Amino acid sequence: MNKKSYDTVTEAMTDLKKLGYTVDFSIMTEKECIICHKTKTQLSPEDFKIDDFYRFEGDSDPGDEMIVYAISSTIYDMKGIVVNAYGIHADAKSSAIIKKLNTHLKY
Image (cartoon, rainbow, N blue to C red):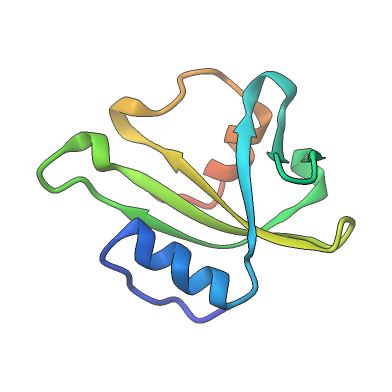
C-alpha cells in the first residue's frame, strides 16, 4: 500500500474504505480480539495483519491523538479499519491485541 498523508482521521478512513477496507472493527481488550459488530466476527491477534497505519497528532488537544489501522484477514476474507487512541487517552491495559497493534509504531 502506498503511504499517503492525511490531515484528519475521517479523511484517512474515507480513503481506506475506497481501497476496500470496509469493515469497522472495535478493540475488545477483555477478549483479546478485534470485533466486527455487524457480523459478530472476532479476530484474535494471529488472525489478521496490519497492512498500514496512520498516526494523528493532537496539535492543540492531546485527546485528538489517534491511530487508524488498515488491517486484513485472509482467514476470514475481511479488510477493515481499527481506530485506537494513544498518548494520555490510550488504554493502559496490557493486552495482546494492543501489543500487536503497537508493534508497528515508532514513537
